Image 1 (spheres, rainbow, N blue to C red):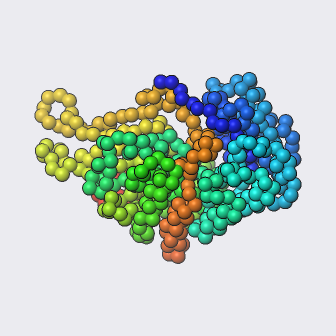
Image 2 (cartoon, rainbow, N blue to C red):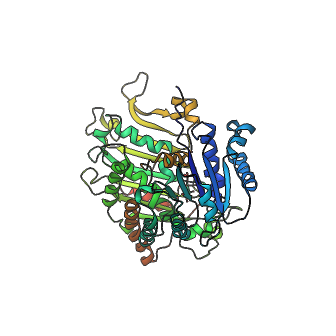
Length: 484
Ligand code: BG6
């Protein structure tokens, strides 16, 4: 298979928060990897912008260290790093004052694509947007990239949208949800809409239920202050899990184009029923040995914030009426695994007697680790002794099927940044989509707050609180194992 990396057009990318953690871990190493692969052209400029006073040389040293720390050794050499650093510049700006903006205006080149990455606190979005606009830095075609959390609830998301809309049109705003940049998430659309096999079965008539699991082994250490105000519902469900749900449940868009896809996702969010209190389980991990529990990590002994949530959700439309979607996500669980499982109904009649009953097919789409898909099918157990049935996986690991190209897959951030440069918004959330997601999330959170519900403690290294298992057991179903 031949690598098909097509270089993007020259661009100037300004990273506000250029000395921050996201820039260091994801944005800068990601850009470097795109450069290494030949996708980022040599005449691009990467401009770090932050408060700290330093010169280009100082910032290049920061970028060099980021590359050396976060890029695998087989994707770097001194020559390529030097060539990349030659494209890097720095400007000290005051996001709420006047300092640095004229310098920045002089740095960006007039006839190139402009992208501005707002890797800063949302409270600074308005000030930066205004100054970019006021100093004539942002052209009508300039793109801005904003990170989650996009608001804390519907009201704050609306406010943020309104603030950005003062200076930018919707077609210029790229709201990142890095889950949409994951290879398998995009593959989900390819599987559904580039094959005839699945779509006829993709509805309540054949699908018994869907499970969406995003399990993590990490806790909240180091991010306790942010996380404690957020919790799993805001941090993961409102955005990442909701996006996965949309891609599974949406109608086929007429084209793979930004608004065609986003219109269909929006319809799914709007079709979600409110969640009944009995259909939600929240949890908080305990400590173990010398690992702190949630309450210590969050430095808030009275916290009622959840580090785990599981819920049963209904999409009220013709396609999905009667098919529940179970979602769960949590920290400090048994393994790091993100997976979507479409569990099909049992065959309507078994010609094999009891043994043939309850043998539904399962299509499991694995986002991480070991991206791939498995289809569970029933076959005859080999050998003599009559017709005994056994379930086996039809396995497709992308790494095995696609060889070295699977190993070379860009990470979510770098893929999405290249989409920004190409001006493709398909994998970014539109303002109305984010607001609709909050409009569904807010009453769920308000519900448990008004009831004064406390999250259930759970042991680290497992599958969350027992009650989360019951959520399916009482419906005669079972969660899939959390296995790395
Ligand atoms: C982030 C959340 O958006 O996603 C984190 O804020 C979470 O809490 C992370 O750990 C998970 O992302 P990934 O790509 O590691 O699954």
